[in-house]
Every structure is written in structure tokens, then in C-alpha cells.
Image (cartoon, rainbow, N blue to C red; front, side, top):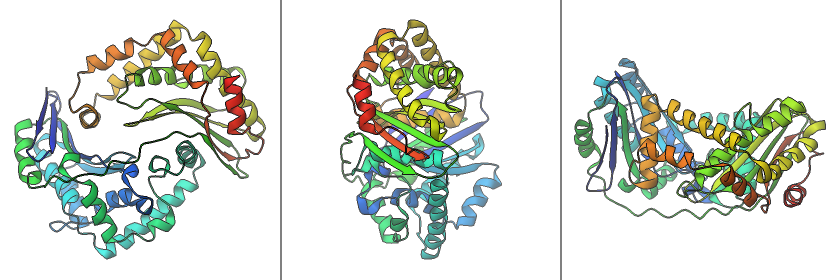
Length: 418
């Protein structure tokens, strides 16, 4: 059973009792992430997430770790472009502890200068690791190419020079600007008691004063490219095209299309590029949806001699999909999407994540049957029409490795529209 409650100050509490579960997932989702930063703040949301675990006025960093692990639980966090989440997994009896602990690290971090310096070093190592991982960093570069000179195009980690300059005042400023009660969702799933969690939320979050949050700049897909030539073993290719945001009903067609194009071993890209032509080891397509935009991403890793041919094959498959996508392919992609969604929701953590995500989007929790109905409405004609809309776009392109022979984004755009 799903229950939703809104505190007088705007904090939302959403829970789902899963009677067969002995454990629970609980977390706080904040509607603030990388795209809510100014250029000078780039990376501060992620830095703040790290600092939440470094001590509060009630708990040291060690005590935070000990309290959750004393009961066999774990606690973690992540930062995305639109959300920062702090979450824990515990046994049902320990849900009150998890709620208290998460509220404490979110609302009362001390930002000790010594801990800031320690965590600064950790984050700089994280940035260095990302730069040393080609099939990770190429996705950041694709985002930059797709949304240049705007918050949606900046990295979550931020540039090293900004991270080196952040201090406690920068962290407090971002909290004051973005951690208001209207941006907070407390979500829990599993062995949970909704009324008990609401009472605890009233105690822990009820004192917060509503505050305005600046609206982030609208995302504007531009296309273009980022190319880094380097003597790597593989050429890493990322191609992006604009898609609808998650409030647009067309997002279901976008997701099913990505599945048919490159979602599995039976998909067009995998069959044509890897199985038939042997042009790559890894190739896939996926869609990321945001509040006002989305991005179809096609990734492949290949040899330098094959990167040009593989780039052209990807464009040709996009064009072909607009002409001959079949009902068999549409049905297979729908089945994959539905099974992936339903199988993924068999854990309390995934359920809590979904509760927070959909409540943030629609201010309600629609039944799963509604999503399944939308997916089932996507047929082959819908997919062909969706593909046709992509043919007039200039792709975003990110290339890394021995990629000097790869076509430019403009060349691919002309091939796409031919």
C-alpha cells in the first residue's frame, strides 16, 4: 500500500509497505543537483553530498558509520543533474534510526574545515579517476557537446580548479538556496509504518521554513562535438540526439525506441555492428529524461580503423528505423522495458527510489499499471514516426582515443538528413 502525506511546510512523505519484507529502504531526495548550480558553483552539490557524512553537531563522521553498521545497515548518497539523494537500507525495526540519521546529516552538517580538506582530496581523486576512464568521461563530454555553456552541460563532479576553491561558505550557500522543504521528499519502502514515519518527519523536518528556489536555466540542445585524440587501444564514440523530457507522454516512445535500436543483443545496432560486421565489442543505446529535455545516447567502443565506418553505420540505422521498424521489434522492446521496470522494483531500495522520483515529477504516485498502459500504446508506427523526427537534428558527438579519422558532427548530420 502506498501512502503520501505533505507536511504544512511542504515536505512530502511517501511510503510503500511491502508485507513480505523484513528490511526497508529509506531516504531523503532533494530536488537540487548539478543544473541548479551557477558556473562558480559547479561541483558544489556533489561536494555537499560528500560532506554530509563528515559529521554533524550530534555525530562525528565515525559515529555516523558506527550507528548504521551497528544494526547491520548501510548508508550512501548520490548527486545527479536534478536530484541529490541520501538513503539507507536497514531492518524494519531500525527504520527510526535511519530516518533520524539521514535527517541529521542533511539538515545539520558542521562542515569542519579539516574534514573539508580531507574530502577535497577524495573528490579530486574521483575526478582524476573519471578522467582516466575513457568510457566514463566520454559521457560527460557528450553532455557538454549537447548542452554547451549551460548548467545541463556541466559535469556533476565539477572542474578540479573549482573543487580546490570551495569552502564552508560555498556549501552553506547552496543549502540555503536549494534545500528548502518544498524540495524535500522523504521516501521509504519495505517493512515500514507510514504513520510512524510521518510523526518522525514532523519532528525532524516540520520546523523548516519554506523558501523560494531559483528556476534553473532551460535546457537547449545544440549539437556539436568534443573530440580528444589520444593513443588509446579503443576509440570511444558517443552520439546524442534530443528527446522529450519525462513530463512529456512521448518519453515512452523514446524509451521503447532506444530499446529497439540498441537495448540488447537482439537490437538493430548490436546485430548489425557487432554480430554481422564485427565493428565493435560494445554498443548500446539509452535515453536519459529530465524535467524539460531528454537525450538519446548511443555509445560504442571500437578500433581506430573502424570508428569512421561505425559512425556512419549508426546514422544509417537511425535512418532505416524511420522506414522499416517492425511490430515484432516494437513488441520485443516493449517487453524488455516492462520486464526491466518490474524486475527492478523487486527491492525496497528500487521502490523507494521510484516513489521519490515519480512524486517529484507528478506530485502523485501513479500506479504501475498506468506506466505499463503507456508502454503498451507504443507500436511500430509510433517508433517510425519518432525516428523520423530525429533525422532533422544535428547530433551531439563525443570522441576519445584514436578518433582523428572519425566524421565530424556536421558530416553525420548531413548523412542523417540525406
